[in-house]
Image 1 (cartoon, rainbow, N blue to C red):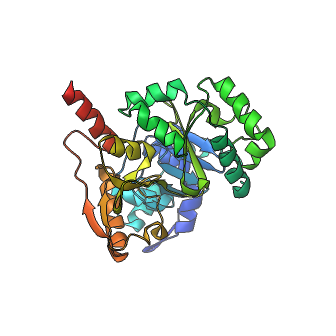
Image 2: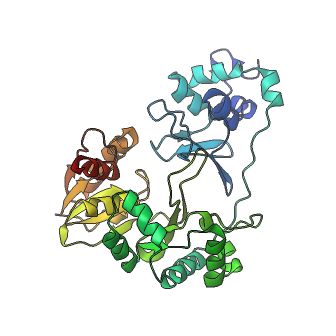
Image 3: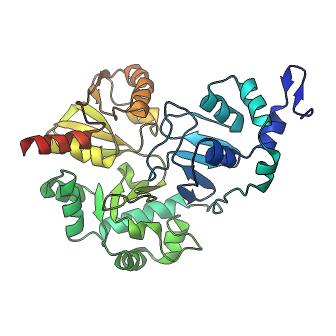
Length: 349
């Protein structure tokens, strides 16, 4: 302990080396195990920031890579000492001192989870794969129509989303979906694009047949076509951070929403605004908003804690670009736009 604490100073490097970050997530934050092991990264459903905290078992909001963590929900990040500082609400020094007291025997017996090796993705190949899958779209899958209808999205709007190349509906059966992906793209391209791990029997996309395509086809999100079960990962994104876009009747009035389902929900509820769907409340780039000067922009991000925090960051950026900013107020009982759409349906019945 003397090497870690000298007088009024703390050797933070030694504390970080002693206490594995994954141990802190699993033993201090209550994450039983990673909710996702992706290329070079572990994902957890809990954040050290108490205001963000624990999410559903299907969440993958907080990533851990080596000795650093990053929460995609609230935007906080850091190492194990900063995680402890947020969690315990103490100073950085006090957090380090508390970590020093962790049981040596427990730490020595702890076996850290291992993330799969990182695969170098070829973005040009990913772009080609996405374009091939878009071009291969034929009849809209019945299961996709039924699932989105259960989320309040009318079949006519689902078909329009397919026509606009925002949505691709893959075969529902995982084996059939796997064969479709192989037939359209080939295994080598899927692997090079980062969609198929070398040690996997099938690409994860084969189990998530709703395929939402970003603007410019630079990224894609594959989603489950059912309600997630405990431990399920409802969606997987591949590619650069890029928005979903829907050019609507009013181009001088724009709404910013979180994700493709909320984008479709806003349309279903009758908005005439053009829409920008960010792939996560913290996942946006300032350059997306350079053409919004003078336009009326409605911020429709989720009404939960992470959404409100993200809006606080988004507002000055939009106003700095010359946009006329407004915040959308979600009704009581609705966290996001799809919640509101479902509430409207319930009230009609």
